[in-house]
Image (cartoon, rainbow, N blue to C red; front, side, top):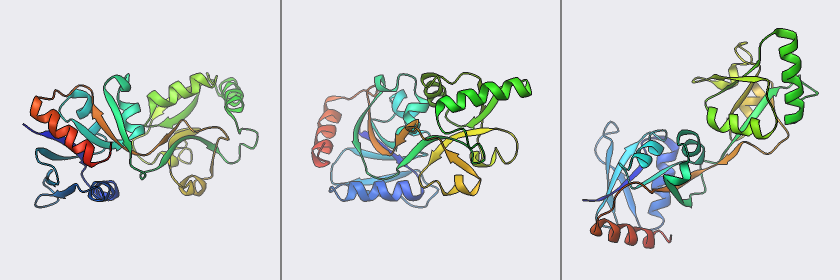
Length: 230
């Protein structure tokens, strides 16, 4: 048996994760071609590298199929109900920073806060006969945020493509999405509400509270956490 470590399978997140572990004496490497979703771990015996999409890692942790996983805070909190009962954050890795924000058309000069958005939503429904549409991939987080902020007359519409383009394409009046620089928002004539974001996210090492550990695996986990300084 081995301790299974889930890591994003491609791109900058994978490279940065490999670098983070490598700087702490744990070598991670992909096995064979880029189509193979397995890898090798050096520095601690008994650890198995599993390459997954960042979006799959929260569910694999919650199902107990992997013991550790690197993914974004946003994905864990969006995909897992009562996430903190299923996973525990061990370390923020210092990369993959992004804020989940609410943005409206730049021409809405009087809409800068959640109170303004609530008033605009009520006016929109009175004028058009249906609720203002907010496009997002993050329904759970955004709904809780807007409820806490007192915004009521809206509907969330699912966006699986380029969320920033939904306002221009007339499929939504506002958006809630992840942003790191805001450049894409500005290019689409959108502005971020002058509020705290829905969530400040970054790549984080999580530990499953569900995955069973036998005696040998518990010792491997202890050695790995010691090596990582956790």
